[in-house]
Image (cartoon, one colour):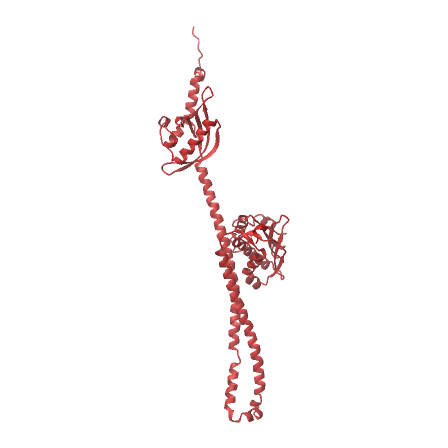
Length: 430
């Protein structure tokens, strides 16, 4: 009687060689990544169905005997050929190489590729085989994030410069207010002038020109003429001095406006060059841009400028940062409700040899929970603020290989912002 296994499995029935062919066939038919085998001339000798579809073919058989140059532009095909020929020569695999594939229709795709030497039973290298995983979507997402980051940095920088421009306009507006006050005082002085009384006196004297001596000595009105002239002279001198003082104030305000505008223009048109700069001059320039607002809000400015070497930085970016810091310090001091509103500017050298430019105030202070968010894009606690100023300032500081940090003991304790910049090498100072 013949006896057979009632449930023989196909795996048990198949020979190892036949089984290998089945496994390889199934694998190449269904694997989602691109698998390929090539001979020593980099011609395809086998490939996965996914690779055929990537080449626009319906079957792997359609690409056998072809090379990458039949599907890609030369820049990618040539690079792939060089990699494969190097593997054949050296026997060293290429693992995890990120490649951009350029296609004849202009498409660019990205793959993560690994290639290894293909050996026969004797261990001889007879070609290469590899796997390429398509990561185009991931790269496009990465590029989109990079573009968004660049756009955000650009927007922050523009917002930072807008902050400077806003500060300039604000200060010009404050100076214009003072200028308007001086002009009003001068106009009122002319309207209240005693010149009309002098004209009346002249007419009265002319009326008594025939008996002028008698009029001045015997007539009650005539006898008061010397006293009137003395009073008029004193009043005219006082009025002249007062109007001259207002005229000088007006001229100073006009010069201040010209200085602010000229300074802004010079910084706005300045080429972004890293160069040795005087930290004191940078502080003073930034202070002048804010002085009108500081005076109007009765904020006292204290300077603590200690000897320090030149900094290595960009003028326009440092101005952007310091103008913003001084302006914020003015707001903080003004909102603090103290009568002794003070902003302190400090220059000193850190233990590491870097230069620290600090703007501090005795104003409202910053709660601990906000210290970690103060430089975040869009974060602000000021009504009407947009949260770009400090964010763009921190970015500008990093671009100059510096840093912007903040310290506050808490609400009502004021705050100190420190811009730290590298010192210029002595060889650059001349």
